[in-house]
Length: 248
Length: 53
Image 1: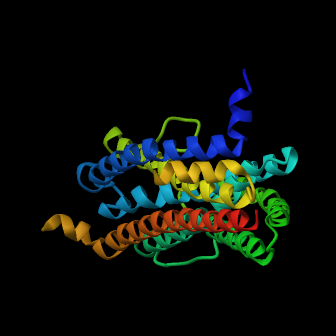
Image 2 (image 1 turned 180 degrees about the horizontal axis):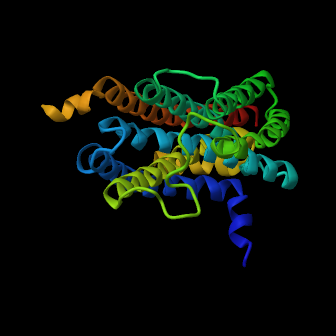
Image 3 (image 1 turned 135 degrees about the vertical axis):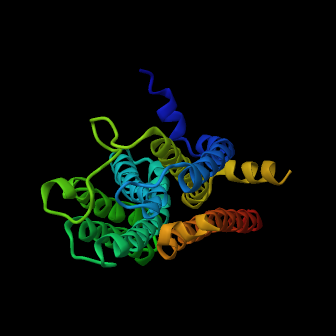
């Protein structure tokens, strides 16, 4: 495999330009897939035989929870890449993940709470899945807090990278918490090696929502990362040229 | 309007979807604002660098 694309993406001017182009190509598929998931999930999919219409929260809850884990993993991996190869673009990506990830963790917790009330009879329980997901939110907030406490960007990059990498152990704990411990939370229906345990008319809108959420995240992250790249290139001449081209 | 009642789960289903829309809208706004600010800062930096030169 050629590593040229990796080195190219590591070049700030190239990344800035390419990322700007990608955002548009990601945003429209995200809107279309999200619209299909919304209609399919709220109107076309049949009611659940146990949970009735209440299960429809899954179409926003599960993608939000998926994002909360996937974004943290992306943040930790790119922080590690930035640390090991001293790659500013990777640090820019890591820094762009935190706010997005934290907001979707809040959403996963809130929609889960709204689902838990009718099904379990409580908004909150100190259950392994819920507690480890709450810990994930604190990891995100710690990361954001640490970054904002250090003014020098390269130092903030290095310090927050260590926190991100250490915290990544929580990701498999969250995922397997429903298997390892007795949990109120139901086990995975889609994210498992076996075949998904639901009919196609339920599954397709859900998969569409997962994909829409992922594309939305990449578009949001790239938009932010372009700004982060500008912040890290204090004196580079390409910035003046790039900004001039954009305003032209 | 049976559909809106969500089989008695309306008070849980609709707030979930409303919250999701709010989080998505906020994220789009924040991301664009973050990039716009970085561009403004870069503009200002370039201007002061030119003045010094």
